[in-house]
Length: 275
Ligand code: PMP
Image 1 (cartoon, helix red, strand yellow):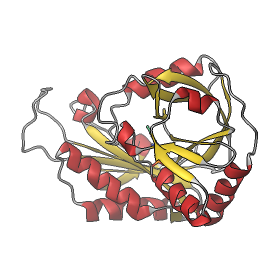
Image 2: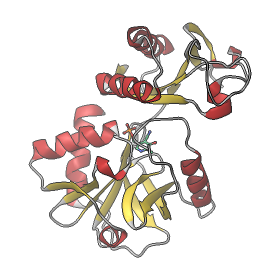
Image 3: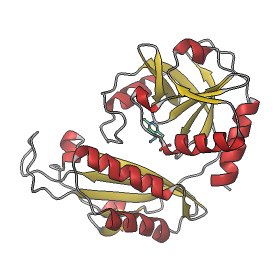
């Protein structure tokens, strides 16, 4: 396998040669945040928005960072990996404890880690399972604490699914690693950010495209019944782009493959970011 180009605490190295402490708070508490920055044709997609969200995540945890230094590491990872299409995974933890302790010393130095990996952005269709959203109340933070997502997605995997769609007491929230859009014959809908979801960058970029196209669009609170009567459902993320849902294994739907509103969105998004 090709070696993966990486960086740990500012030193560039191959991933397999990086050694970390078991007392990293990322390891003991998931006291850490992350970002996934896609790049296509050697160029980052929505770079500023990703850096801005990374800064917001650190602010939410009270971790102070040198965003210029981090930004230049991310740029170097993209450049020096020499990969044409891929993404950067970048993680920042609060630091390394002397001994595991919930309450941390203020003197800790943040710990940073990133790598570049190849990825193809070919469109995919998804088989998903609908499940209760069992996560915490701060899903707006891009934290590495993803146990709720991990449990739900791996339960769904047993049914041959590659994603989940979550709802909190019948109100739609998001996918396990993506945001939800759905369409009727004449309007596109997505749960609003007030529904305790991650402010996805792809979600934001797509909303800009939908507005540019002048399509009917609403952000709000939607329930499972509304999803069930949708003509098209798709999930968005930095690595998936726009991925159509072909089937929800535990919900009756009337989905049409390649519905015109999905195709308009996909064409516009792919022309702008993936060509
Ligand atoms: N929601 C969740 C829970 C996610 O993990 C992701 C992907 N990281 C997204 C939404 C999509 O966000 P983005 O478009 O910024 O990749």
